Length: 261
Image 1 (tube, rainbow, N blue to C red):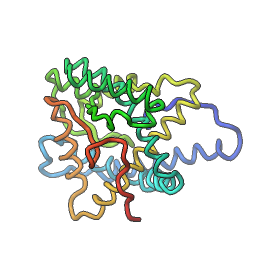
Image 2 (cartoon, one colour):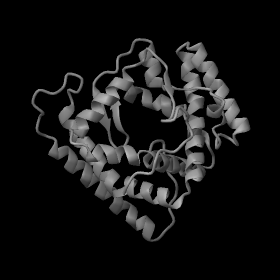
Image 3 (cartoon, rainbow, N blue to C red):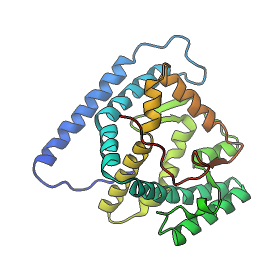
Image 4 (spheres, one colour):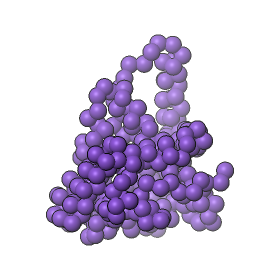
């Protein structure tokens, strides 16, 4: 969803449909922003932009319902579970490269060493990361990004901020986003068409892995916006400790149970 490069479209119906699609998205965005013009009374101190954020959340949910979720469901239906696991492992291994850099910048020797080992083991023994051999060997994953690196050195998260399409963020993480984009190994892939294909596949894979979580959240009797905000801010404020990420069974590389549909 981020860092997509511009490519030349073939002539024909697809080219004519692009302005319509962009126009429809613009109308959705405008409608979402207009619907949030009313100021929220007594906003959370961590969320002074709550009226805007709720409007942007509504816009993102509409985009998700119309585009991302249907594509993710189709991907889950078409691609066998082992293939989806391999795709998830591949992108997780790419993410580990940037996590290693940030662990070094944060002077976290143990986390950096573990992440370095993960990248090497999975790249050379796991077919470029398709197989998560490192988790099988008990090598922990410590996810980091530049926003957390800034937090490590005393930069506060700042107010909660919902970005178009990208979703929950903070002011600190938004300023760190261009650096994180540069740190994404996929951004250096050539040709551009292959790069954009990888970006699109990563978006679909990420959304497919969230189908079960979103299904549970949708069925829960709570304010989804407040719940998402509170959990997100809690996670992003924990800059004092490395984020050791494991699956529900203690390992990465295993898909969760299929969501009921």
